Length: 213
Length: 291
Image (cartoon, rainbow over all chains, first blue to last red; front, side, top):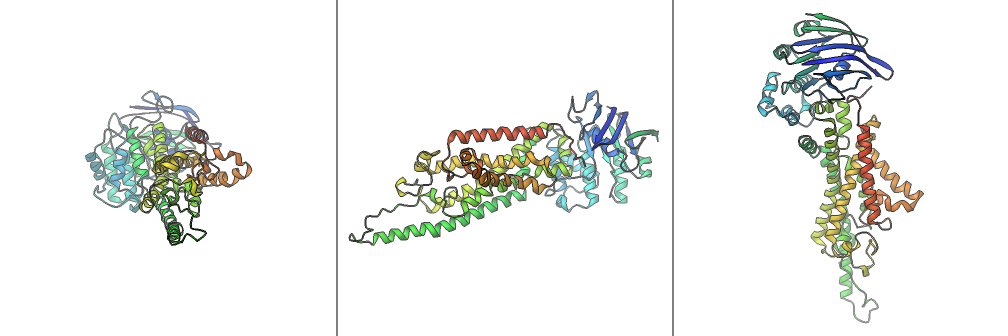
């Protein structure tokens, strides 16, 4: 598993949000994106997910160019910004609808995934009644459901209580596999030290430094 | 494709606004039936009773009485009350309400991203368009069918007698044979046509989704276009009526009679333009809105 970013730049409304980024992510480790607000962490994640197109340069996933050879990575789970689901459905129903689009996810796996993030799959509350923390957990469940090869999580422990943080932390570490790339952006330095194998410092849309934890 | 289409149609037909839209259509339908029953049907039978009691020295003795047919009471063809015009004027709103704003909401909230990473981009947009089309079509068809069934409960299934001078459709007009001889088929044919136009009006909201920063503007747009066509374009040039969607959709053919060729041309051109603009607008763009 390999993601190559080649001379990536992204301009939005005349602002360079990403500038000449070259980096290669390989499977088997957790990458932590760090940097100040607005430094381009989320934008980089969106770009890897295929949700936005680079103004110049290319994203190659296993040697396939994103936006040219493939529209989106073949196997990816994302949690970017606030997790959004359908308001009138329960957490289980929401995941079931999404799982319907993936061939490799059955009902039991949905239940297991919900349990693994600390949610009750029998909970009859609709999504709009979920607290922020529950929404975040459901977002994580959607990201890891089906065990995708690429997992992108932007602030995964946002709004999650202390017990929940420990669960999510262990869950993420448990997902590390040589065929899987996990990229996380997080403001909590302590968490990042625990979660990430490699930390990537970003500033003004550029990768400034790589640190091995 | 089947999975995403199933998901989109499932979502479209389960929204609250879908039921609200049908509810509004049904309310108009019930009000119209109530009005027609009291002001037309009952009145016509009172007239019959009056005629039956006439003696042959009365000047009205040889007057002819015509039975009110099902089409005269149907919302689509009943033109004496305000309800026909009201229904077809707000038709775009009823069509858009169920699912027309869905792409805007999903796109701006980021839910589209969850779908797109799991299925092909083209399939997502195609499925979304089909679901919006179907939901819009159903929202328009159900009140029309409901009204026809209610009308058929108290009115005979007969066409309008041309001699009665109460026929809104003329001999030369589109589907006149059905109107005069096979009323149920006329209703069916026009309901199908309105299903198509209802779907297209709903899709109009999809096309403009990316041009507005407000879901209200997206959903109101087809209604504004309809008003513009109905009041604006027709005032400027009434010769365009036979190609004017806002006149074509009305089964009473009150715009001076429809022509099958013009209707079909309008249908296919509308479908072509809608699909073209929709896919051009969504061909290659960032999923998350640039702020």
